[in-house]
Image (cartoon, rainbow, N blue to C red; front, side, top):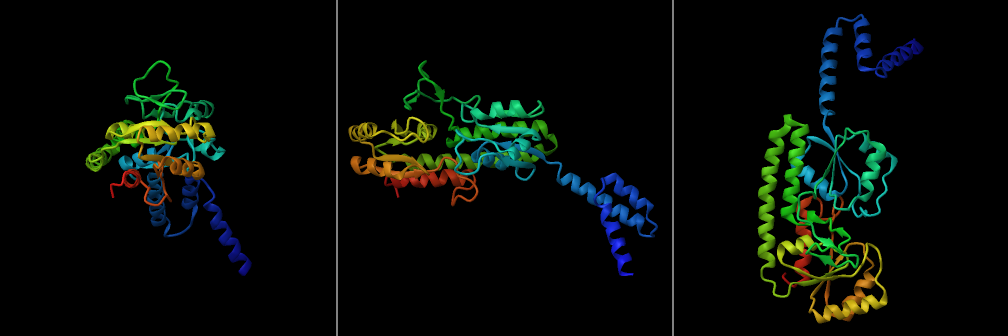
Length: 332
């Protein structure tokens, strides 16, 4: 008897290994007075399961873009971020599992402006053409920088590329979120009321944040700064800070002793009060420059993300960096 009971159990379990329609056929074959009720319950379950998993698959390149998508879409999309927190978008290489996610996605939101040079090759090689690729920096007034690493606000012909760190300007983030909303409405019109409502809420919060930053930094007299990496040029332009140079010519390229000496002299000559350093840089280099020049170092984070204390979500990220900048300029 025990062996027969085990056989019966195994036979039941095999049903669940079948396709949905095969399951229905099996149920119709069952000789039970509960078949009809069970069939109704099972059908409702599959309908609910199918609806829950019918969300649009959205892929983003970096955490800040995901933060903007979340602000507009909430839980209405299945969101995947390619780069983990603190990963460099300049040197990223997608894993096979991530390539599969992109291949099955409906839309891919990226910054563009040269930030994700790997993306076009990756998409071309692995996506057949159904994927909508959106470069959020398009239509924005971009700032270029020359081969020396110095920002070029005048778009001269010697400019080698554009600075992609547009999300650090809250008003540019608002424009990008509008693009996200419009794209989501186009491919998912059924949820357009949700996207519109979330965008309107986000817009009000961004404008409040913008006003807060304006008021906080309005009292500054000396607005000069030097940065390790030119991530903050859009933020600086929006709020009247003045970049006096960049320490690293390229991400991760340590300055030579000769360049360090020039930087120190530059800081002294231009009365630079603050050095903006990105999280994860060589702190020894930063310490040498600070000691020799007398400038204060603040560690900023342009990316943030889940697991980063006080930097998860767009507003937390910007507010965190604002607090660090306040410390650098002695505004606390």
